[in-house]
Amino acid sequence: MEFEQRFGSPRPRQFFAPGRVNLMGAHLDYNGGPVMPLAIDRGTFVALRARADRRLRFASTFSTESLEADLDELPPARSGSWWDYPLGVLREVPVNAAASGLDVLFGGNLAVGAGLSSSASICVGTAMALSEVWGLDLDPMARVRAALRAEREFVGVRCGIMDPFAIGLAKQGSLLWLDCKDESTLHLPLDFERVSLVVADSGVRRELAAGFFNQRVDECRRALEILKEAQPDAACLRDVLPETLEARRGALAEVLERRASHVVGEVARTFEARDALLEDRPGDFGERMTRAHESLRDLFEVSCVELDCLVETAVAQEGVLGGRLTGAGFGGCAVILVRRGAEEGLVARLGEVFRARFGRETAVEVYAADRGPREIEP
Image 1 (tube, rainbow, N blue to C red):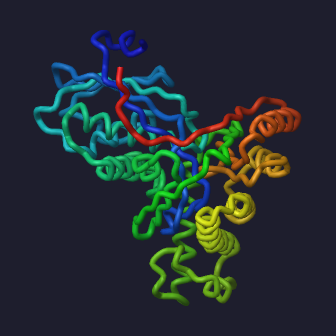
Image 2 (cartoon, rainbow, N blue to C red):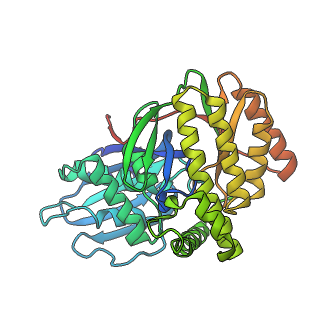
Image 3 (cartoon, helix red, strand yellow):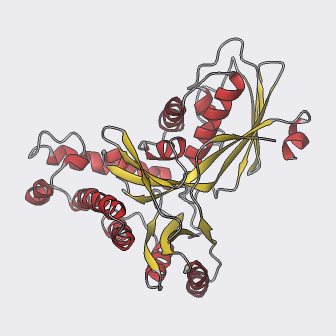
């Protein structure tokens, strides 16, 4: 085992936290809107073992870079390295003077930078592992909070609440309905006897996505400030009524009008998608996914030609209900809702078209739902 190769014996305890795909509610979490994410059966593995001293060692199967520090002298600021995420979590949990040092190895089978929330996966997984090994007794929501603060306050990504909630509160076979304004949640069943999720990787990595993401957050904030003049009770962009937007379009700069139009339209689509799911209309649910992608492409401008190719190719196939980019965009993956039995043909067609268009392969896989963070028994 790689842990023993790096840190020696004895064997460590091992934990797993899934990634997620978001089916509806694109870029709504930081605008106070509803979202519909699903935890997936790929994620982050955390192997760790207590030490006899206060030394901390972080290593990863994805990088040759590692961190060594003392629990009493943790790095005070982010470094831009992968360990900023687990280090940010460690700074958010209650570490007391009696806590032991740790040897920790991070790995997994979730593509990094693919829009499947590898960052929240490593943060929630770290929070759970630390809680168990140090006996902190953090409940799922406390782990979610620690993960969220790590990304926002230490790493510096102005993310919404969706990703750690989707991972930390996952339930097998269910979508999470999360209202990001009041943080209310509901688990909605998705019938995996009848439908499957296919995830296709554009191969475009999101190294610069954080800056573009923060730019979109700013644009939405500026749009809200202007629209609040006509609707003072709007606490977030989710609250803006379609008639308010229509009346005030002329007051918005063109780019702000596009961003606000996406959010207002996506809020309506997401409620419609929930109704379709509850009323057993998967075709209508999938149609809302495709319309969400079109809005992300044209109004929010976070897609790319590779993602557009994957979605357009998919929705033209027999048995496909809908598809859209997942995550923040700017590259990463497309998630496609497909009827059972149509997966093989879709996978082949996506590979064929993508290869012909871009001269390279795309990874296309069928994903299942996951039940959430847990310790893995040896």
